[in-house]
Length: 445
Image (cartoon, rainbow, N blue to C red; front, side, top):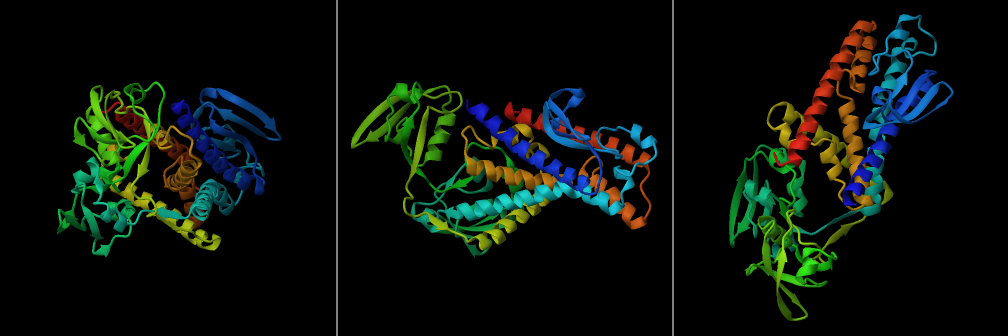
C-alpha cells in the first residue's frame, strides 16, 4: 500500500507539471494563430495511447510512458522528427510562418509556466505554513546535536554544541543544510565538544556527502522518543511493546535519542534484540526480532523539545517576497550543483536522482505539505533544465531562435533536424544513465 501511495503521489505531481508545461506552449501557439496537432500527457511511444479524443484541429490524449509529454506544433521540427510537412509551402497557421519573436514566446511558454507555478506554490506554502524551527540554543541546552553517519563523516560527533558557522552565531541547525554551506569548499564551525571550544575546519566534499540518499539525518536535534502506536502483527507487537512505552536501552546499552536507536536497529538487521521499555514506572525486558529493513514495527512520538519550537508567521505580502526569494535561491542552487557535476567536483552517480529516486522522496504516506513542496521544487528544476541550450529541449529551440533574431537569418532546416537528433541522443543517454544510477542505488551498488 505504501508503494502505491508513493507512485500515486509522484504520478499526480508529474501530471500537473507536464500538463501545465505543455499548456504554456499550447496557449502561446494558439494566441498567435498557430495550429497545434497534438497535446499529450506522457509519451505515446510507438503509437500506443491510453486515451485520446479530437477537438478541432488538435488530438488530445494520454500516453503510457510517464517520462514527459508534448505538444506537436504544425510547421516545426520537434522530437517527432516529422519533416513531411516541411517539404510543402509554408501555411499561415504554421509555426515556421510566424515572426521569430512570436516563435520565441511559444518556445519559452512551458518554462515560463513552470517557473510561475513553482513560485506560486512556494508563496502559498510560506503564507500558509510560515516557518517553524527548534532554536540552536535549545539543542545545546539538551546536550548538543545528534550526528548521523554523514555528519560524522564530515567531522561532527553526537553531543557537539554548535556555536558559530564561518564566524556567525547559529540560530537553527538548518543552516548546516543551506547550499551556501554545502557548496563551499571550506567551512569553519566553532563547536563545544566535551566542554571545550574547538574550531572544526571542514574541507570535505559536502555536496557529495550530503547528496547521498540516507535513512538518517546528517545533523539533527537529539530527539527523545516514546511509542506512539504499534503496528498490529509486527515484531514489536509480538514482542510486547505497548503504546506510550519509552525505550531506554537495547541489549543493555542505553539509548536516549531516536536516531541512535535507529542506528542500533540497522546494525542488528535480521537479529533478535533485547529492548528495555518503561511505562508508568514499570520496567520490562522484551525480546524483539529486527526485520531485514531495520525496523520492528512502531510509530515514534518525538519528545524533548515541547514548548521550545519557534514559529514565524508571514503576511501575504511578506510571503510573496519570501516565497519568490526561496524559489530563485532554489534555481541558483540547482545551477551551482549542476556546475559541480559538470566540473567533476561531484560524482553524478552519488548526487543525481532519476524517477525512482524522485518518487521515493514523496514517502509512503500521503502528506500534502510534502507533496506541494516537492511539486514546487520539481517545477522549478524543470524550468531550469528545460531552458538549457541543448537541442531537443526548449532551450535548444530558444538558442536557435535567438541566433535568428540577432543575425536576422533563420537556421536551416537541416541544422534544426540534425540538432534535434543530436539532442535526443544526448538526452536519451542521460536518461539511461540516470535510470542506471537509480537502479544501482536501489540495489545497493
